[in-house]
Length: 108
Image (tube, rainbow, N blue to C red; front, side, top):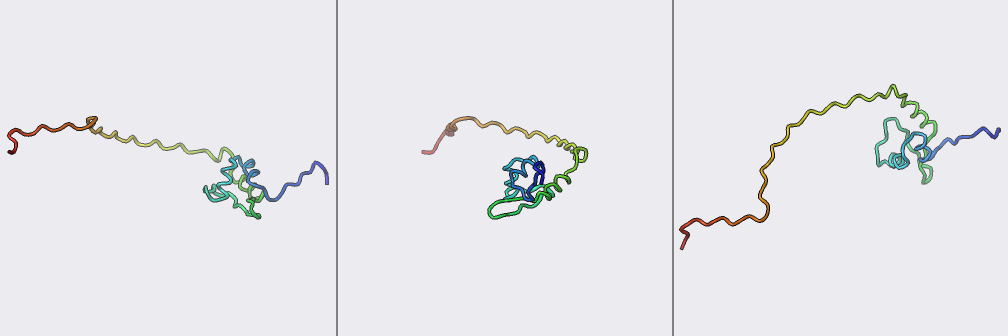
């Protein structure tokens, strides 16, 4: 075999997945452990002993399915309708309430 020929492993770890796809390592790990939903079409993780691995061919197929920049043009977000401003409630006086004066001619 030629020294310039590099043999790529069939299974790759989460660090390599993050580099290939452009996600952060923590994002890939959260997807693998089910803490975050995977994007549509994202390959399933494989458990090899205690480690998480992905099939290289599945990842390459996922990357190919993403398409180019022309295919992923985002639709503009609809502008929300303006909501009417609520009428302000009158402010309560600050501090302790004062005693109310007694009516004249009180009880004996």
